[in-house]
Length: 414
Image 1: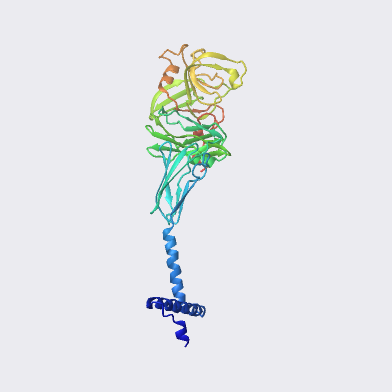
Image 2: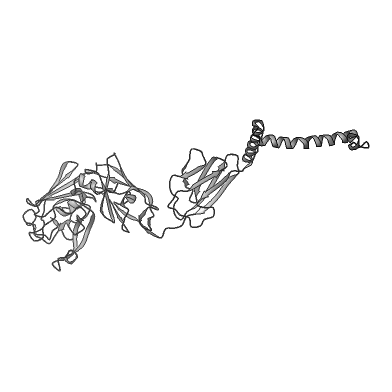
């Protein structure tokens, strides 16, 4: 019979059972395949379940990968974009970016904690170290160095740091390069006052930005100028380099009013009359500017030469005493020893300056020129009226007070 022929009596029972098991399994496989092709739900679920488990196992086995931009090892990295750190196949635990000067770059994560972005751009010419730790992964360390800017600019400011000035002193900044992006530069500069008052910037030109409140500073005010110009692009390819805070102080209030009709100057200190002096202003051919002016320079003695103000060789006085500058164009309030004492209070005879009786050598403490100089400081206000001349331009010296508050604010770029 067929069965006795197939059987091999020399085989052990266990071997016979093994062969049958193999035959049985081999016999089942085709049926399973056919059943699968016929669309059996049970078989499909089994295959799907097995595939999902395998995928999950692969995912669980993946190691988080951290990527830093700028790239690790970069030597001339861009500093005009924020630093970013991303992770794939994981989430972040911590990210810290430290400069070689000890400073740190703050930043924020996205909602999924798979990306960190610095809140500010890195500084130029700085080496940074990035330390990133992903959940369940090894720490990642990367370094990069930002490139240095090509051309740079700075802002020279008035008054000097830690100085004390009169109530009319604006904060005036002159830039070494013309600024095209005024808004970017102005946003990088803040001027604050204690006691608090609104302070607004006004652009007089591409190289000059002044700050002032609506009215004169209050006596005793502390002013802080914060310059955050480093890496601010003033114009294409030209960047600021300053990042510093400086403070100034406002002293007592002194406002002097010169009436060239009566040829008299009244000096008021904190609202009370301190002194009254006879003066001589500009003659009919050389009238004195009218308006609000601020003392911007002071000299115990200085040389005054007419050629420097376009008046040829009309005068050259080497030792003008107690000279205090009111305009860039050459207007001073100063002592005068060469004119007769009868001139002061009676005639306007100068080439545009305001003169007070004084003595040669600038050491006589009894004369008006000495007394007024001794009572004054940078930033004091001198108001000239009835001079027969128009109001001085706001940018001719530190004289922005001649603009209304509306006109002043119109010159702001922010």
